[in-house]
Length: 222
Length: 222
DNA sequence: CGGTAAATTGACCTGGGTCAATAAATGTGG
DNA sequence: CCACATTTATTGACCCAGGTCAATTTACCG
Image (cartoon, protein in one colour):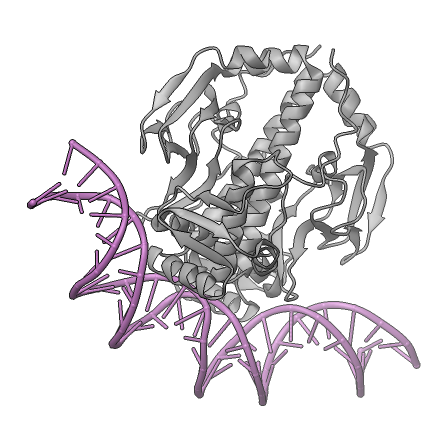
């Protein structure tokens, strides 16, 4: 069933838009390669990045509910996506209770990560938000890796980091330099090294939401 | 099936805590009367309210995924809740595809409303956030009402409004007074009257997420 | 090798926070 | 129904984290 969702694929250039906010939309997608992001644009032209997406993530769930897309989905790097019709989900829910329960689990994980963003934006400092974003991206790049790499290519501009954390690019730059001076990270080219991940997590109030799962209630495969 | 979820009920006093962050938890709840909220506490003691809950809302979905609760759920007013075991959901997913699809729809609506909060916190002014909260609460009080009341009891302290919008109680007060002076709202006791809802929506960048739904893909009832 | 996007840095400004005092509302026991 | 206690709301004075603007510098790219 899952393999069937990825039958067709479609490449996307860096910067390419897959779904535009307010578009009529009936498709969903699996991201198979690259990094993407979803965002909304406000009246004053500012942008809020809602999340970054990595291989394995499903995108476009809002088409399950709303006639028109509530967010724009665009490629941060060159990508490959696999589109499938939402009718597939109708069949999935009917025929595969375990899979549809797992779909609920994924949605809940996303919801909880969004509440983490809300708390970060509402109640933490600029430095904390940048620290949390670094950890989140690090962990999302390899969600199943128990001992993730400390050094990785961030792959985001400082403007993108700002639009994700509710800051300006200028202030993101100041915070990155400050984290560097504090000895918490190192930078070279686009690569970041987390020199002290536990301290970053404490500063950023960060909890890894890929951990602490309890899926014992899932129904058996049919 | 749904009626079965509400068999047992439990009253809760104003301020009472139903679920505490980090508690072991295997139950979910339906709110049948009153207003509740979910929030997280940060290390520095500050609180971020994640959402307000109204009759008909389901609470505690995070127990579907995480061993320990990721948020505290507490009563804003005197309430009645109906607890049910998450095992009920296992059966629901197996036996009632249409209901489980509707559960996904509810989760998506909540997710989208959370992304609205993220955008508001990250990229809009204090006045905009307060305006948006007023509209959101107005619409949540009667989600199915096509012509909702302009005048309603807010039922929140200014501190609670602040903890929901990422502001201090003092600044919430200033923003409410400003909205009043602008002729957009009127206040008496705890009641608020929205004198110019369209303008409030424009200021607050508010979209009513109970509208624009498209549920045509739902599978038939079994 | 020019040309453009991205990163850096300094100078200065402002939206919203902090602190503190007062008033109004709400609740409580008698 | 009243006196008192406790929240909650209101307001002013002042401060600072993060924004704005502008100028360089550096990295990337055809």
